[in-house]
Image (tube, rainbow, N blue to C red; front, side, top):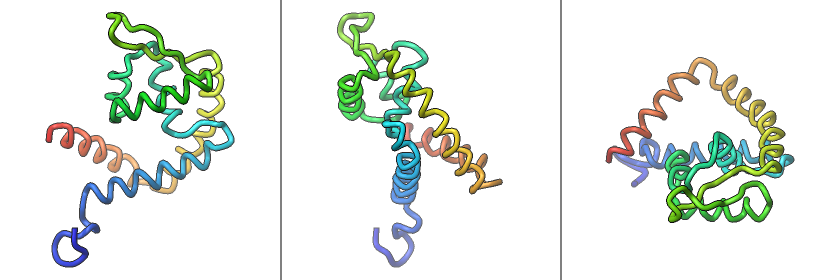
Length: 144
């Protein structure tokens, strides 16, 4: 990834996607700070709020490593936001959102909507094509 010639960080897909993801995540985290949730925790609650979900399925939904999700879940369980119960086959664990987690999620969702609206407004007409492009990048990357 040299800075000169035909292939520096300025046109590296990985570098630019990671940089953008970190900066967007930091912006959402700043907005969410008063709610006591990070954007990652909010995403976990959003997926798990649909119903009990296995840790593996949760990791796949988030596009995250299972070990990273497990670490986050342990922190969230200690805070009383989620409960880990035995899964349907006895070998897995199912993630359930607690009533406290649902309340905190509901409060944070309003803040998230504001942050989301601001970023969409700032991007304007670029928003929809960007989302389609990011989904395509994810699809292509999963196939590599």
